[in-house]
Structure formats: structure tokens, C-alpha cells
Length: 80
Image (cartoon, rainbow, N blue to C red; front, side, top):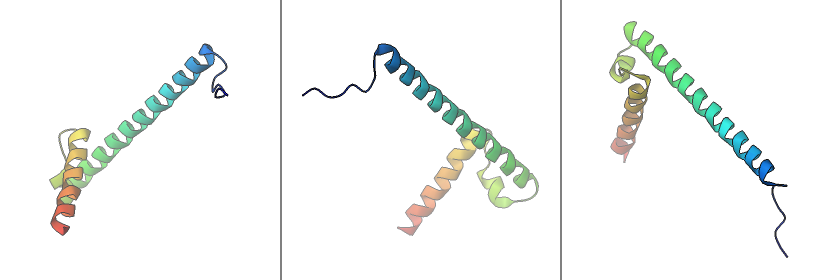
């Protein structure tokens, strides 16, 4: 017995694909906004004298995220 069709036709399949793509695009945009916000907050903290923020802040939000990831990877390795 053949499997029940998930989509009625090719148009429905294409519409579902477009909807998934849009959800993924919106999720990626939200992640980017949050990364920029974190970078901004950390820059302010570093300017205010927070030494940990100053040690982690990068030139860009992406660099700041990499620095944060490396810090926690190093801590995890040191614990092992």
C-alpha cells in the first residue's frame, strides 16, 4: 500500500518549502539581532570598566561570539 501523500500537489509542496525558508530566514535574522545586541551591551560594560567584558569584546559581533565560545571551551578543557 503506498504511503499517504504529505502534500496535495506540487504547488502545496512549494508553498510549504517557501514557508520553511521564511521561518529559517526570520530565525537567522533574530539570532543576528541578538548577537549585535550582546556585542553592544558588552562594549558598554567594557567601557564602564568590566574587565571580563573587555577581555571578550571583539571588533565585530561575530568576533565577540567567537571569543565567548573559546572562553567556555577553554574552561571546559581546563576542568577535564
